[in-house]
Image (tube, rainbow, N blue to C red; front, top):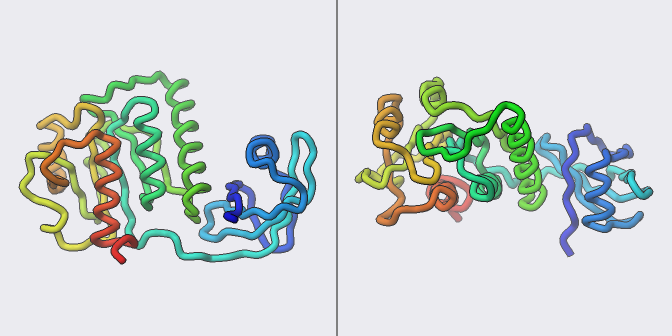
Amino acid sequence: MRLSRLYTDQAMDEGIQLTLDKNSSHYLLHVLRLKPGNALIMFNGNGFEYNARLEQATKKQAVVSILERMAPQRESPLHIEIGQGIARGERMDFVLQKSVELGASVISPLWTQHSQVRLDEKRLEKRLEHWKGVVVSACEQSGRLTLPEIRPPSDLASWLEAPTDSLDLVLSPCSGKTLKDLQPASDIRILIGPEGGLQEDEIRAAEANGFQAIRLGPRILRTETAALATLTALQVLWGDLSA
């Protein structure tokens, strides 16, 4: 039986007890429905995970004992940053979730010409917190030991101009180049458009900043499919899905 995994931002070490915050306690006690004595796995994004046991449970608070630190190898050898044109609602959530599961290291939401979402500062702050929650949940489910960084949304031009030593790629259905035409790399940035894709001038701007245009195949993919397919292809060719 697979043990439940729970993220906390608290420091952990063998032999200590942790009192979980309100949200984590609610999830542990009322969603997972664990009882005192039940085993679970805890992690805090430091590269380790910990065997733990639920010791005490009240209606609103849970206390767990940290028993053993472990260091399984589940992080990708590739450092992949997804520059994702901001998509609407569940599509963006899907991109975040699957990017985490497939080993992305950084996710940069980008405002592009076809981005259909426009948020004021207050709503943007709430959306960013929601996205961070999606990332945490995906880490809990997938066994990730580190939390991928999700950056505050930025405009496309600023992101393109940021200095980098990575292999920079932009998806373009008109390109004649594919991933197999490239030399393997371990540090990669890839630009993916939102619903409606990227405009030609946006692709040209990316190329002017050192990005190489590639296509994934003969078909036009939705934005959420493109992220999933690109990460899978990179991991199969150069990463930890190659076996």
